[in-house]
Length: 617
Image: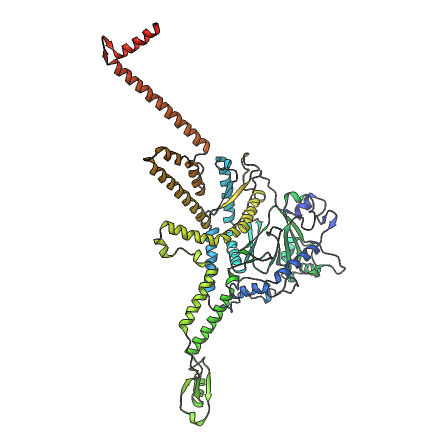
């Protein structure tokens, strides 16, 4: 991100256009832009997503029944299962609930490792090393960071990220929309799989998101105005009829880079990088005479207004794969085994029985053996034989428990369960080297997850919040003159980021100690070689590096110029001390010569007299 002089301007909307221009921006360089280009692209993107819907539906049914919308239909064809037919918590497929605990642990681990609200998890730092230690620059970066943190804490950001973590770990992708909010400064709308379709740019980055929303007629009226030209006749009728204000309509919000369908209107190409277009989903909203309806509303944004994080990018589609994808076969098998286990226990505890006619009547009358079934044994010779089991069930429960644990452990491994929980008890007796080795192993396995969340979720998300604080809210102070136009970066301070830094610090400390020990071993044998070894290491830079890794206040660590001044002053003091010592030695020698008798005088007189005679000659 770039530190720029503060200009308090909101995201550009049609209201801004109406106040600054004579007409609304319905034209792009003289070409009318209706909803057709958006609908065509939406249909093409939806066709690609429709191929993944069966997989998403299985993931929803077996792992996260509270997630997913319209997975039983097709966005491309417009055949969808609406809310009146949708059962968001149909968990009938889940018999063993261990998967809920595993997913909750995964989400909690992501939250604690990345975005734990009670701990600082990011900071801003200058890319220019010369500015990194500047007190004014550091103060502005820290103040900007604190402002962004306060805005995040006062919004629903942390609640929304929990939902995004859940979506990414189960379905492979988590999406959320970040917009300014008049009450809590920003609002994050987490989306669930099935509500959106995505597209990538040439570099494989998600840069387009079309979201299907449902809004009542009253909400449409309040958001887009009662006389919006993009409304269909049905929407107008509902707005005019108070009894129909709660009828719902499908709305598409298309978020994509500016200029996707041609040059943008006005001067938005320089300042505004993304656009949002709202339009009615149904093509029936066009008028009967074939006239194309207009877009309900356009918005332009300086940054990407949404985040789309993929657990792991795979395939030639913009959606990701996840631990849910990997463990779905095991989860299906576990639920089938659990169902069979419950059936076996029921058959053993309350089996079907065989009884004579009289006993069967008594059983039915009193219901003593319910819910087991009763088979009536006919024939006069069977009277008085009582009740006995119709068959013998001898299930091997021990083998079942072993197989169940195997499946559960495979599911846990897919979700990195052991890496989200605290170290086991036996690790507390490990040496520091063994702990570092175990930590290195965990970090290596989680590195792709950390990188994807940093680059696809936190980088664009924090950039979006920063620009909202800068332009919409006016909460960020102008940077120092020396910082204006300079780039600064986001660094993350979550648990795993700190672990990586701790490893770097440990390696630096170990290297430094080995150098010192090597020099110490040579001190008695060859002092010159010991000094040569130490001259290879700049200990001042090592101290500065460790302080930067720990995010120590720059005021505590002196900058290089100040250290150089101190070193020069110490060198001057040492030189002066050496000179004083030499003078003190001369004075002492003179005193001794003055006290040494030579002939009729002293040795000092003889020397001084000799020098005088030599000068006379």
